[in-house]
Amino acid sequence: MKSKVAMVVLIALLVGASASLFWHFRHEGKLILKPVEPTREPEALPEGFLPPKFPWVMRKSNAESDMFYPSFLPRKPEVVFSIDVSANLGGTLANAMVDGDKIFLADGQGVYALHRDNGELVWGVEVYSDSLEGRAISHPQPVTKWRALGLWRFVRACGVGNFLYVATSSNLDLGDAFLLALSKENGSVEWMVELESEAGASSRSSVTSNLVVADGRIYVGSVRDEGYVFCVGENGALLWRSEVGGIARGLACGDGILFVTSEPSTRLHALDPKTGETLWIFEHDAMLSAPSYRDGKVVLADSQGGLLSFSSEGKLLWRRSLGVGGDVNCDPYVAVGAQRIYAVRSIGERPLNLFTVDLDGNVGENFTMESDEDGGKPVASRDVVVLPVRASEEGKVHLLWRGWAKTGEFSFPNDGWMPVVSAAYGEIYVLANPGKLYKLADIEKPVISSVKAELLEENLVISVTACDSGSALYRVLLVYSVDGSAWSYAEMEVSRRYAVEPVGGYGLEEEVYGARIPLQPDTTLEFYVVAVDHAGNYEVSGVRAYQVSKG
Image: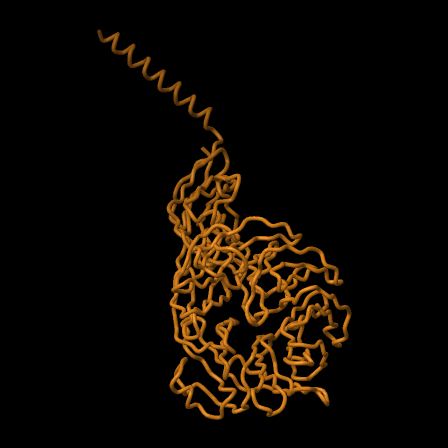
């Protein structure tokens, strides 16, 4: 009996020894990870890893700012604040300009600056009157932050460059219009120049609704018979004056050319922006809207609802009959993005549409509005289009993924006004009526649900589950350090790709992102994960640390 027990024990020992020897041969030289206590903290995320952000400085301008925000906007923002304002500019809503930490707005008699973060008044300038009695009972307040100039001229147009530029006109025969440069910081008058008419002109110069700042110059158009275009340097010097006739409303710069249209003219003028000399004139068969410029092409609409594109040499490239409308200032309901044009149909049967058209004139997808909705001038970003609409009882904005799929909607009391939209720094600004400004933004950080790490051969494979329900994920970063070295950054790739990118982009819903780090024995590895959304918000995971050794 004892001999049998001894034999069983011996066999067990031999089997155990064989298994141990097998494990040794199989795992000898393999890497082993041992979790250890982290020694480092995450660093501030460098700006270069955030989405680019830009101001919104002009209403009708060059390729960088004509209703195109060349970065990203939230898919599903929220109202950050709404404030009482005064923004009735000649019977239309003013366009909020945003630069740095300030929002600039105008009404018919003055201009003012608000804090971008909370909408509080920074300063105000009453241009028309020499009294602040009217400002004492109107918004924004407090009146102690206002000053009066008493020029007895109405505000007609504004733009932002080195200063805030304000162009005026007058209903009385007090002389020509003025162009003022105000300090963006405190509203002080930096310079003022008179936009002088020619001797014997049929009327004094009175500025139209358009003002463009480009390449160190300010361009404004004037009303009535002569239809002047004035060019003023940002130092206040009147550089030239050119006559195009009619009411010179449409201005756009690009390719070293100033493009001009006027009402009720059917001509597109090309002027030398340095001298005002006419380079060429194209004669159309219908009145032309204010133009836009993008990548060698001039885009505008005509009074018959057509969408047109010209070369910078004045050749008509294409025309599409889409029923495109516009406002009383000859501004077409069009936004020209980096690759597509977004044109709102205002003519024809309901329901109306927003069309997407590429720069070669090919019509693509469209978004159909509700039967009681009329569309206004959209704002295009790299992926989201903001479409303002006026409905039977309210104003709205539709947030459209690439111009065709709706990701969100906001409604505002509007008293019959068409909302006006601006975009800056990943935020959306809506004037729903002359008395209310709304700021829409995504202020929520992305969510990192899990971080998993596993050893695969000689690599550490990290998988992260993350999402951002407001803006989708811009990028997910793996940040790591070996033996206390400076933090290194690696882009994590989404694990599952679709034939067509999901509406709203990757990461609007929960997705898995992965990356791997090659390992070396006898080192200590530390890492963390950063998830960044398209609004620039980001979340940082905790730091993990492992000691790497050979088995």
